Image (cartoon, rainbow, N blue to C red; front, side, top):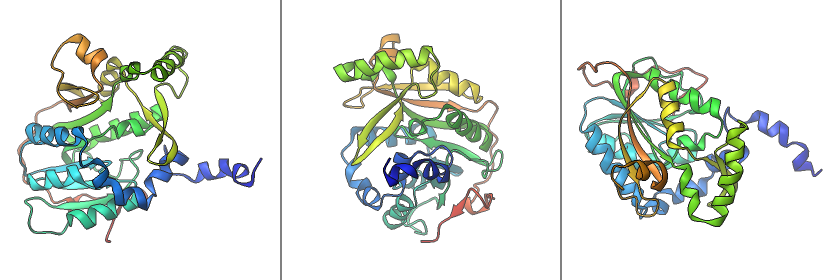
Length: 296
């Protein structure tokens, strides 16, 4: 065993909850944060999901949480629409890029931005019924490879939302893997893991932007609807996306279950949303252990 292998278990114990070594490499990479905006500039999904946010949430006032905000593309759009935004991410380099590119203190946009470094595995720093909307885009939920962590995340979002508050979510479809021989082999093995309830079922590893072993969870349609229901969400609307172009495939059983590369899901917490005044993000109290507002 090499010296690095000898200490691998100890390193894993020191990582944040729900974060493996590959995800930690991603979260701490200055290079990826510097490249983030340019890397996704021409990705078709990035135009589609921002337009979708605007069509579903409309303009503020209100408080929204961008969960796994990255370099802040959705955060900036929400703030431009008049929402006060909690931009939450584990990655300090990503939040630094957000600060540089979107200037949270600027007076040129209608809403404000508060960058927050926090682990999505623990959202209990958000007070109950303290946010009006939440977005979790670009398969961020899938980057939480442990089932228990995903469930805790969804429960935390549900707790933080006001009654009637919306969660806008993007996840990948398990069936998208059928388009390649390698993907079909993975599907066969994963079907066995699902039947035997192996803990890492649905997780596919990939070499992502220079980081090996990054795991992304792929959901079946019954699986994601079940997980949302367990957290107390009802699904309001779904857009089934083409894997290559991100165009809307339209309604239909086959489109939703088998053809979609992923989905944009509008889910809502039960209850009736009450009209209330805009809430400044700085008024949201946070636990000292899990939240750090960054002054960069």
